[in-house]
Length: 462
Image (tube, rainbow, N blue to C red; front, side):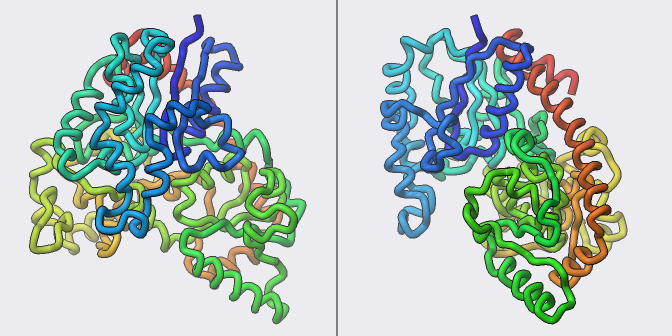
């Protein structure tokens, strides 16, 4: 019979991409797969996610979809704090697993071979009442402590460690920075894969038909995009700048609903630092579209999905520099003896020119000078500089950094269309390599968890 894979998450990224990769594996004949995507999410209102979302009203009811989607923000939750709906779901999750087994056990117990879960990782518990539970592939794209009530944090951390040290399960991450976070916090070796934005890559390819127009992404900090647009509009009105910057939301006729090929027709795209979290970076990379990003924004990528509170994981969490200092509002401090002078002297940006394997092989969490978990209100520039070097922005080749609006305008002027087409071809070449490697990676992971039932073989070779 086909290998049955059940996918489950609240947030579409990265399982949106995993779903496409698995479909590709099935179509190429590497596996006979029955892929059952059952995302329970507020994002299911978007038509393009329909095939990923649960069609079962009973499953949505068990997972309390209507409750948690209406109680997410701080304003909705009030004194209970952000994500109060999810936290309430997680407080009673044992009852959720019991109801899930009652409703879905008969048709799925002993039938589902692999359960891929994430965001939140707490949902990896869903099948625990089954007599023959599937092998679990947990995707760490946000700290396991996300939306877990404070009183359950320590017990849940221990549960994560126990769950993913069992040979039939495997914890993975979609980028090197999350792998390093997992190692820093829990001491676990977590293999990582590369997100591809594979569906977009199949639907669009850079053509630059709109050679005088540059696309601007939807910024999470909208004032930045507005400032860039205002400056370039002024320069264009004065005859000093020949290109138009077009806000994605303002594309005539389709706005944010435009097909991928429409987007790929622009001369280039200006992306936001947050675009790693919503898959936009890899979607545009997959379309081989020359992509500009503001280098000074990279610190933000270390305080979005990456910044959930770091609760005690094991004895290393209590090393100097791992403890929250109460007198400093529970900020995580740098290791004792780590002075600015010594860090600058040893050169922070060590990742440049090194392979992923070299980075991970040289990694020692007891030697990391900063915690990857940081405050959203107080920033440590050295910590931000250190961890931003491990983001996809810093590690992916052929992206084009800029430093402020003036530099962006200058680079758009100095990069000819031929220059951009050459960059596009290099992106396409690298992407083809990424696709081959990633497809092979997922083939091995599915085989080990779904067929051999022994993921320890993977961890031994990595």
